[in-house]
Length: 87
Image (tube, rainbow, N blue to C red; front, side):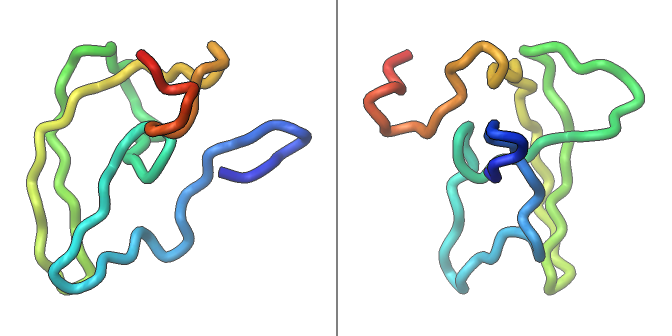
């Protein structure tokens, strides 16, 4: 997240997400997550998308992931585990 014109804005992580050997990263709303941009078609919440994560060592991990509603405009895009995250 970065401040742009007084508002927070999501941005790509320079260099990608770094994973330590034998460890992982949690992908979740408000933290590290995958955002699909520049799509040709609209995706509806509840649909599923096939993704392939590609790692710097050339390995891949295939996933089927749910499409979730983008809720930042609704004023409740926040980090899980905070007092504001009660739904």
